[in-house]
Image (cartoon, rainbow, N blue to C red; front, side, top):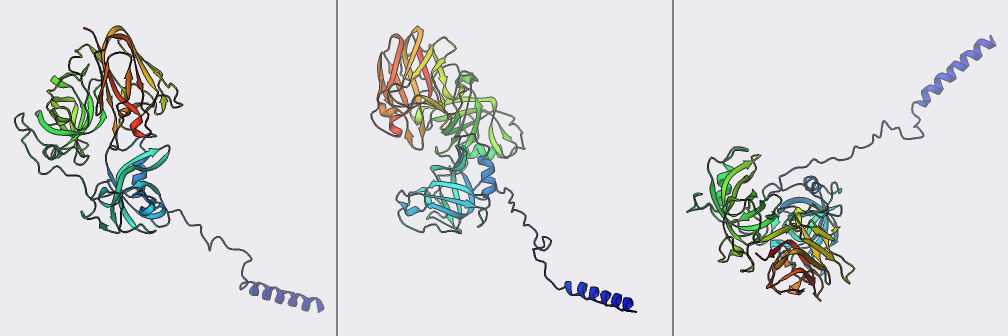
Length: 452
């Protein structure tokens, strides 16, 4: 009997125990009650235009396509939320450095580096940035040693919390006005008309006939060189980088491949003749090797097309274009052997910075103060013409402080000319005593002239 009573008591206690445990909280968090939050993923959006800016994810995606040190070819628009401010506009330099993201949590941050104020001006007074502001920034982007950012002083604040500057969102360069011309030799299209005409073509459709397009060189992607004999550049109606028409792999004067002669410069006034296409349905451009430089005025002046710089240097020459040499970014430049046997030997002199090639700014060989280049040939050298680089408003011509071991040196803007020379070996030295941009000689191309 005792055994029966004991068993019944044990069963009752077990039932009570299990029932009571239902209300006792677990001594640890149940992962099923606290699921791990998935990271926020924001997809790229926008096309980088004023009407449809990139979001930050898209801006990062575009910047990642650039090589180290490379810049975007055109201005783009980026919209985001200010998440971190390194230096506000009142920091003393008229620009600001900050980060923007696709949300206030800092998802997909992009670095806005030394960006100007409204209307592409330096800040003097006005509203300052605050965390959480929604901004649209307009400008060029770059992959700076792996950091994706805007190019220093080449971007500006287009809108702040939906409000623009005095110009209603930034003082954009002129759009080039209304379309003009009919595309004939007597009445060429202006760039606005060329864009309108080409955009009306179906995707990848080629125009039936050649058309003539008049414009001003606004930027140069690849200048004329002997390797491919063509050039790739942009033209616009006012020389700005807005509403540009893309002149893609276009031939030289007289519809021929380039072998020697003058090179394009930003600001040159040109007429292009050839077929155009609406590439992929979104890029109006000339067709590869089916257009050419019909007429040309250097920097909008009165020079006739085909005139050689230096006047009496003759036609026996060779040109080397820096960005066609196959050099890597930041690669030291020592000796270049040209196809005709001429040798270019670069030397650092007393400067710890020796000559190097950089891809930024169309691709240039940079010569610092006391750097030199020696041109050696079995033929008699009568002259040398260097086409210098212009970047962010600065012309890198060593302030004209260049010496030569034969002939005389004349510097005119982006062109350095050595005339009246007569030697098999000529050394040019950067003798600048200034600092910064004016002290550098950045070479886009060198043309060497020989005795007939």
